[in-house]
Image 1 (tube, rainbow, N blue to C red):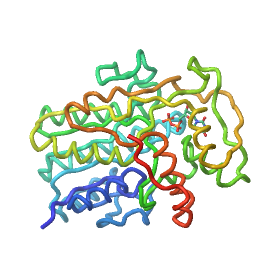
Image 2 (tube, rainbow, N blue to C red):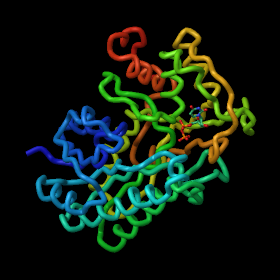
Image 3 (tube, rainbow, N blue to C red):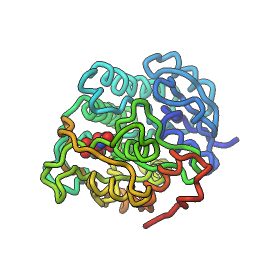
Image 4 (tube, rainbow, N blue to C red):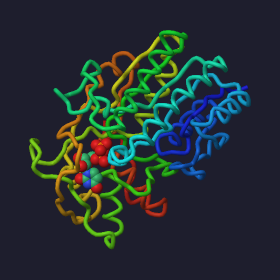
Length: 336
Ligand code: UDP
């Protein structure tokens, strides 16, 4: 029988991409998702179990039904602004939900976990590139919820022998090379999908650029955009790593290359015949000027090397938004 892996949040953007990779690697991805933000149509590579991390009975049922060897946990609320308005929602879903998952794993004797964490645990960077030794000082409830979830996982590793890898993503972006999975949030708050939507649908109006007075080279925020395919590869390596390593481990996932909001816009305009138009708005609360990863630890320990840069991210995302009909216009590239 093929090994089964539970993918909490497998109907979401990164989770669905992961399921495809797991299936390609010969594993059966069992998606556990409440479909609050995920899409039923994104679950194509294994069974879908609709359930909620806040309902322990849903979890026990899925652990009883499948011979699970490991868990990948993507299920979370992930919007910074929403988290500031509704911290209870974030703490309950992301912290209590993770605790329930840990208890279900413990009861079922499933001992390996890869957890989707975030650069938001670091808060305002004291230095860049940010390495894993940087203090965790989250400045919003989303970052706090992921930090608290990490600490719960650490405690379960220390006390109960769980093996866990927390992967702190910088800015996840891009889409599947075949155009099968991509980023589809409603409402959309992220830069790259917003730029592409505005480019493809001029009636949406100009894309909003939040702030041009940051202490960066061109005044706009700098981020480290990491392709979802590279993220998926890191998860496969993390699963493998836990076969030989006990305990709790944390790795940053980014390219180490920062791009400003203005650079992302210009590169997209170069791909889209000058579109979209843009308009500068005031700063968005809670945005640090620069977030760039040091991913040296992941490279040296997991053997992970990101293959895609911004051009590949933008082309794949553009293809996903355009649909397969125009895929040939923007062939995929791997620019590293
Ligand atoms: N941003 C922007 N316009 C948008 C969405 C985002 O100017 O429509 C900026 C945002 O202020 C930040 C950067 O783009 O500086 C990346 O934001 P995103 O929401 O994509 O990711 P985050 O860094 O918040 O995780």
